[in-house]
Amino acid sequence: MASPQQINNLQNSFQSAVNLGGSPGIVSTSPTQSFMSSVPRRVSASRQTKALKPFSTGDIKILLLENVNQTAVEIFNGQGYQVEFHKSSLSEDELIEKIRDVHAVGIRSKTRLTEKVLKHAKNLVVIGCFCIGTNQVDLDYAAKIGVAVFNSPFSNSRSVAELIMAEVISLARQLGDRSIEMHTGTWNKVASKCWEVRGKTLGIIGYGHIGSQLSVLAEAFGMQVLYYDIVTIMALGTAKQVSTLDKLLSESDFVTCHVPATEDTKNLLSAPQFAAMKDGSYVLNASRGTVIDIPSLIQAIKAGKIAGTALDVYPHEPAKNGAGAFNDELNSWISELVSLPNVILTPHIGGSTEEAQSAIGIEVATNLSKYINEGASVGSVNFPEVSLRGLDLDQENVVRVLYIHHNVPGVLKTVNNILSNHNIEKQFSDSSGDIAYLMADISSVNQSDIKDIYDQLNATEYKISIRLLY
Ligand SMILES: NC(=O)C1=CN([C@@H]2O[C@H](COP(=O)(O)OP(=O)(O)OC[C@H]3O[C@@H](n4cnc5c(N)ncnc54)[C@H](O)[C@@H]3O)[C@@H](O)[C@H]2O)C=CC1
Ligand SMILES: O=C(O)CCC(=O)C(=O)O
Image 1 (cartoon, rainbow, N blue to C red):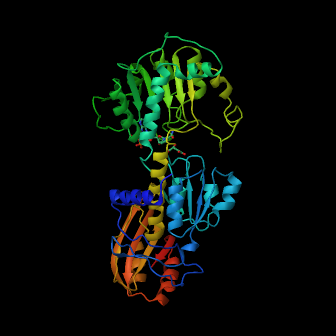
Image 2: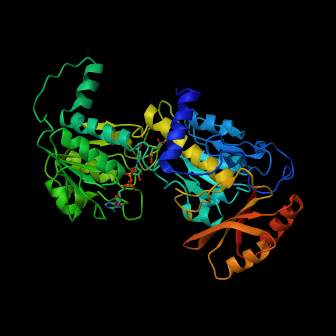
Image 3: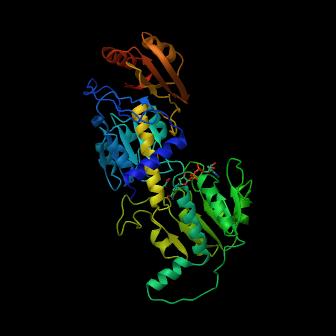
């Protein structure tokens, strides 16, 4: 586990890598019982900017599920937030109960934050997906209720790429089967249908962060790389982009999926696609369980068309670790799948390495803290990206207004009218679809003005949510 010093160093390098300014101080969400409490301000030694801090950070409650890395827990504790940590995901009913009062929730890929669940969140400001995929969250609904969602777009990409590379070789050499045989006392020294990967073609569907990392690794093993993507992407090394999925399928010895879960990628590989593949080729999936039609894959393996598969993700996955959790009640075809030769199954561990988890913990917890403390939404996946530079140390009586609103004409006029008794030091506004986000630093604000500003903004017809930081 990383030491506090290592976490500090990693956090510092993360901050400078993403070039996020601002103060590391303590803040809260909206005026609550501690709204007027005077808390000493903390100041960043390095940036010399004023820490925004409206009221006690003890008010900020963070719910962390699915064994989010301890680096995140330490960052949140360091901010003075109240952290509730769970190793596994929760049932929908438990989640609804727990999400009611929290300001932030941190999840990985299992927890479904649906409209039904989010409707029960009364204080929620931000969601952290401590992973790459965000399909488990209703992003549009979250934006609609003014909740920003952050993820970690690439901290585990290398880990996934390395796992896939290991599986490509394992499938080619039937390592899974040989190992299972040895565990049951069977010595089966065979070379038939076992291959080197050198000179073979790897077909990558989705040439994003993971697909492109994998491309480099595969070439280092002497493989040729083809990729198919819906956007034109510059090839790394001597990889070649192909214009159709069919071309990739018909020319590849190994086909691996690295696309997000969307309506378009649902059953991207099904019976017709398996039929289009080379005889004796292999299929790998470490993206999402919806991307491959597994019953059709089972038929293609049984027919001898596909020589093996490595799967890390499934349409339904157990909520927690434990014996017996992966069974036909979860997905009706599991016993059929496990009975087939050269099938490597892993429990969604593509991104599960110490390096990836620690980096993800730091990245997402830092972004969440910055959003809670300063309102900076840069890097959010469902929100307009807005940030303001930090306040100077000597600026007194300054309030930062965070106003999330419907993207309709007339808002700026109304809001600036409300703020017009004060000096607007700086202001930034951006929109994304129906949602817009305005940040403004206003000066010459007395403590007694704050509640009045809040009430006036709260009464505007366009408002989705408001926070005032000072
Ligand atoms: N097994 C695991 O533990 C992990 C799984 N993942 C999954 O892998 C997915 C991919 O991750 P990244 O490479 O980081 O994402 P990325 O967003 O960097 O790349 C995805 C690529 O897929 C392409 N794409 C989208 N729809 C497509 C379609 N219909 N056909 C072809 N290409 C399409 C995009 O244009 C993009 O280039 C994630 O969305 C996540 O679901 C990510 C990390 C860990
Ligand atoms: O590690 C996890 O829980 C999820 C990994 C994953 O699938 C992702 O990052 O999208």
